[in-house]
Image 1 (spheres, rainbow, N blue to C red):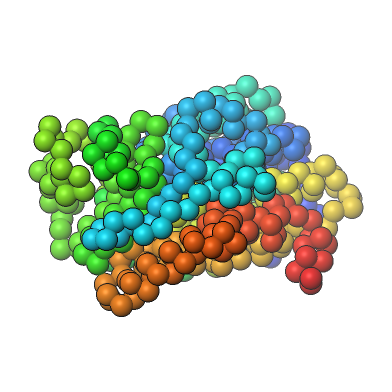
Image 2 (tube, helix red, strand yellow):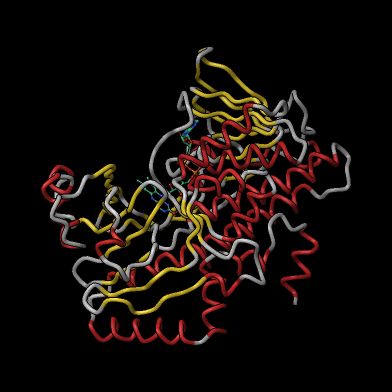
Length: 431
Ligand SMILES: Cc1cc2nc3c(=O)[nH]c(=O)nc-3n(C[C@H](O)[C@H](O)[C@H](O)COP(=O)(O)OP(=O)(O)OC[C@H]3O[C@@H](n4cnc5c(N)ncnc54)[C@H](O)[C@@H]3O)c2cc1C
């Protein structure tokens, strides 16, 4: 990996965006694909570099919130998502011993958003839809099967070192968006730290085709279930019911994934005589980490490359998509202005760093950590207090509205906008 020398780049000498110097997106996951589509909508030439030979089919995130659907509408993908996704207007906060504690209804926001619900859709479907959409776009070049191996900042942009079907190649970029996931090579080349911690327990995600609502009739489609020994997160996606539980540190991967254990875990969620078919099972380490900077020179970080968090709340991928759209709008303004244009390049890129890092820390990290702590709380007094708090919020329409506005990331978008020009941001912050 080449080292990146941030000080060489000078916004005054930045190369204009052109087919010779495109914007390069590293990583073709949901965030990189969204960034590429949004940059193309802004009229910019884009090269997307993805190490996998095809769009990745992994089962991972599955929730899209209102603010994210509004953004994805601008790249014309929400109709396809709705055709395959599941609209879920309500979600429940439950306790494993006491049952339903509180229910929240996103339809309280019907006067604020055209999408007052969570859309459940497994992320590999969004990746597939975006890849299909990008393949037909003449402004976008897709380089699958190609790995970023190094990156240098130059006086007028960046030079990327790649390894792919043509062997080792170099690519010059005007700007780079690093959307290459939690182990980001771009972040490594930037010399940026990934500060935070890893939860001691791993999370198991087990998907079954059995309809859990038939077995537990008062269950919602999205359920956060607190328990001092073994909390659960149960949600419905179009093709499955997914159950997430913590895996104690003492269990090996083989023990935690043993089919007999999965069966007994699911039977404890809801007894089912026929036995549970498991259609997908994954174990993964969960972290709360944020990059110490989201931008060095002409290079921006987005999505999991910039921040990772507990899945409890379903906001990690959503905020990554917000990063992608914010970056694309800023680069769109810079690209359209051309060299010698009226845009203050440094102020635009600094605004990206400030806004997207603040959202990651103050909303995404804070809320997912609170959600996770609430579910795994072992002190009985605190657990009861948590229940009382959730009931009180749900019972008060004003507080419930504010709560779901926040958990669906509408609050952060209302505070900062997406891609808001630096001068307007300053006015907002001064208010
Ligand atoms: C098992 C699992 C379950 C999850 N469940 C949930 C959930 O329930 N809810 C939730 O909100 N989130 C969940 N997440 C997190 C969610 O999947 C991520 O937030 C999301 O994938 C982030 O998208 P991304 O595009 O930023 O990164 P990724 O999806 O990681 O995409 C990064 C892409 O970059 C490519 N890449 C990496 N290095 C290079 C390189 N050097 N050169 C070129 N390409 C490169 C990779 O191949 C990959 O395609 C889960 C994650 C995992 C691992």
